Length: 123
Image 1 (spheres, rainbow, N blue to C red):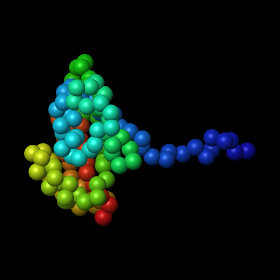
Image 2 (image 1 turned 30 degrees about the horizontal axis):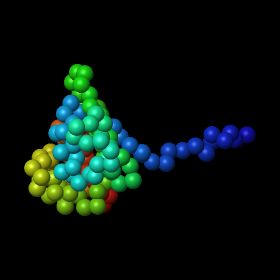
Image 3 (image 1 turned 180 degrees about the vertical axis):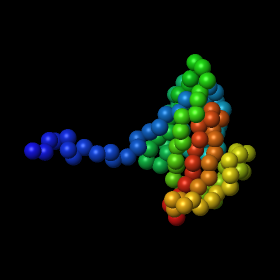
Image 4 (image 1 turned 90 degrees about the vertical axis):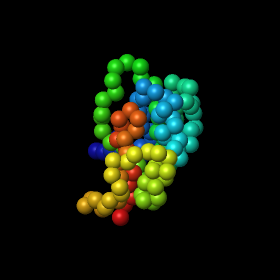
């Protein structure tokens, strides 16, 4: 007999929260990418940005170093235009946009706290 929990499934990503040692610097970085602030800001301990239908949160971390933990993959409407936007704001992507064998066009950018962001679009 099936239980009511058998219908439970993942529907999407609500939010991802990244730690920062320097909230003003991190807020400037994400604002340069065009993410609107929904809550908090440069002088707050917690900031939330709109990221499509989800959220990207920043939390101030004052204890110890922040270690690399993985990569956030963010779909954008136009990878090449987003790359040019990043360059225009003085940001330094790791490489120019390229097509991947897994059928995405993408480039990587590292935020000021070492979190790797991949901006992509299905081919």
